[in-house]
Length: 441
Image (tube, rainbow, N blue to C red; front, side):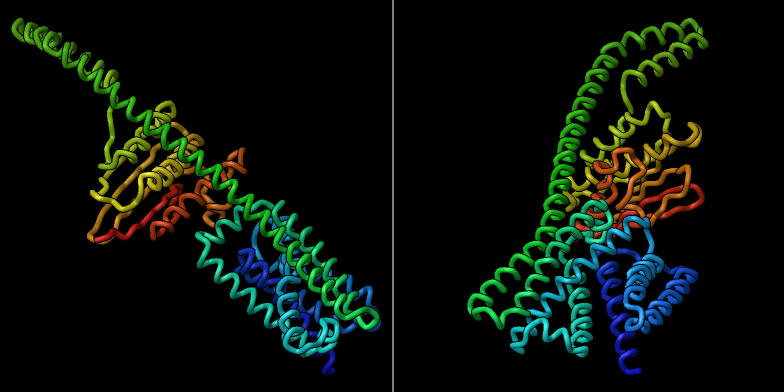
């Protein structure tokens, strides 16, 4: 009975290891729905009962365990099924890394081999507990050190987890070779055995780091590409805005040059008491001036003005109604590039959302409010269907998902970099983004 209870405890600990790796390191969200939780608990009971038949039906028991363990974690978590399966296998493979760290520490202090330590049930329980603590600490450190860590992990494609699983599997093969060396070291020269053992540990760890390094380098490559694209966009928007201002100034000079002649004609109509003709001529003058001189919107920040004006021009063909209220305070500490990143992404998303609506329902509302200590930016637009708030920053509905997946993620990262907070809200067919910054005194 004691053996069965110990095996059940180990089974729960192993399941907990996989769960901590998936939910803490790889940021898979746990479900809050009662039915999946109950189903997972039922499967867990089945897993514990299956463990009792280990000695009589080892092959059948192993098969049931291999099926039930991922099934429990899949039921207890949320997200796309294939993504969770890929993360599960990656988690299982990478669990050997904390195992290896714990084994090496205990081997160094106790002088025992990994094989001999494996034979002690107490050690296996202790190793599982230490591995869980190790993974939890690592996840907390990553969340503190890496900006928007969960958003970064959630934006990763499945191929990263598949490649990581392959690297970790290769590392586990090397670890198996290490165990073989330990089993046969009594027949070999001790010095040679230790040297081979150390080399194979280094190779094993290198495989783990290869999988992690590949992911990090590829993510940085994509972020660099995205930042370069944003910088090009920043320069383009600024150049277009300067050109627009110059064109407006040119048209204003033309209107001013012709204004005196127009006034003489209006004066003539009024002297002749031809008031109807005067009104018609004045209306034509206003129409020509409106067509010649583009209405410029200003929020007291040149870069945001440029981004906003570019978005308004882009949305003219869609007949989007714009409501812009408020201005930025002077001496704002947020950089021009960061503000360009925030507004270009948010306004582009709003225009894309309006494109799907009937023309009479298209509008974008931008509001900027300032208090003594805070700056609130709110962008609001109608949507065809409610936005899945839990997916923001990690998925995209655009065709070019690989290149556009960083949009909201970039906004969130930029807001957090400037010590701000961002909130998303669905309210009766309207999607709103609210950003709150604390102003420096």
